[in-house]
Amino acid sequence: MAGEEVHITLSAVALLDLVLVANLILMVMLSGYENFVAKIALDETHEALSRLTKLGIGSLKVKIMASVAVISVIDLLEQFFTIEHVPNEKLIWLVALHATFVVTTVLFAVADRLAER
Image (tube, rainbow, N blue to C red; front, side):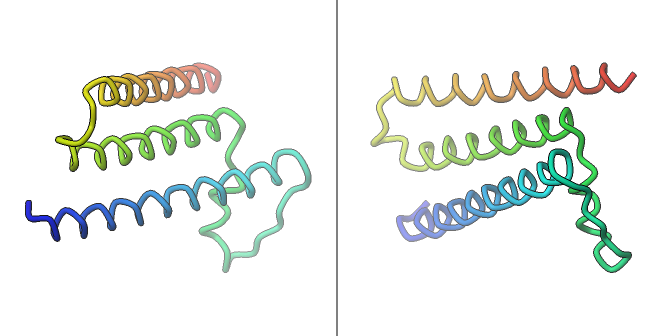
């Protein structure tokens, strides 16, 4: 890719990263309030928000870890765009960290599924 295309792609990826972090914060705020403080009364016009308020602790953990894994892969993707400037040791650590996030997410999802039964 040309330098300008890489810059545009990295800018779009950074924007996606910010959106994911904002969604994560919103999800934790609404679900945490619903689970620990008080129930949120929503009418039918706010049906889209009702999904976020119905998250249990187990499913919230899975969604948080999935978001962290996606944010991790976005950072890893950014590093791969400039791979000639990134030391191999850093890439190995980033891949290992991302794999840890993915495995943890899968384990949380399996534990949540087993807890539902």
